[in-house]
Length: 421
Image (cartoon, rainbow, N blue to C red; front, side):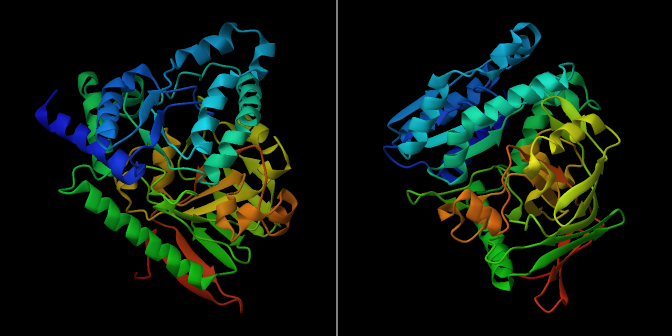
């Protein structure tokens, strides 16, 4: 390893602990654990995990523990396991994550995807497994979405992922090149990465504050292939960058992050929207999606690639045909400027304006966490067993805010912010 790479890896670990998690003295740190994408973290992340553990203890962590997993075990299960076992999940893994969240301890998830691992698995098998997983993990996902404690998701390279997104460079250079890209988009190459992140998060908060004060009744998103009006409920909340956990710890849940997002009114979405970047879902690619909305409901949907996938997804439940999130990201974001498709939603959603079909975030509505499901839906929120991000932005997209009197104000032009903060 080069000395530059080792220094950047150390800086990455520091940003993870000090900016992402904001790990506190005497907190425990759980690395890995159950999620819809995996049962733990891959063994290939071990060099970074060891550095993180060392620094965490130096910062006063009480205990650092890791849940490891071999991603191929899921493939083997799909290929050879009994179909009835798809509904099963080890309770001890869920209990470990719940104990961590309820105790107010920190947790770190590491995405190191193998995009093509499940490409030959029957879609119905994947969807059945995923739906059971979502049900098992609902207690965990509820606490995570409510920021019960400080948590973070990051990405690390592996050979399969690097081969997928960097086929144009020599094979033996791809993993290192992907590391360099991650260091760049996570601001690790800045002279002072922590200060750079503090400034970036502050800027995102200023944009959120501006839009929260405006309280537009709708957004109009337009581009050559999109003409979509997204209603916004009363007391919607824009958020992005750093957040605060229920036990008072300021943290940044995703690294990198470039988005600010809010809650669409599930009954007030009309028009046509086309996706601008493919999405990978458990090995299945969806590309060139066109959705037609009427009164919040998807009434037509098709895709140039993965048409059968999108059809199955939007018919999972009633909420899967409605929006749960709308997010704004400038076209000039560092992730977008790489010109790469990452096949990793943590990165791809931070390259583009995006919408999400399915579950909405209660934090995106004032006092949303205190509402019952019925009250949340009556206020405009959406409930569903899925949350699927779909990238729709480009350098040709404009976004306008609609005022109560029906007049509009520009928010974005040609993919870039037009208001100063």
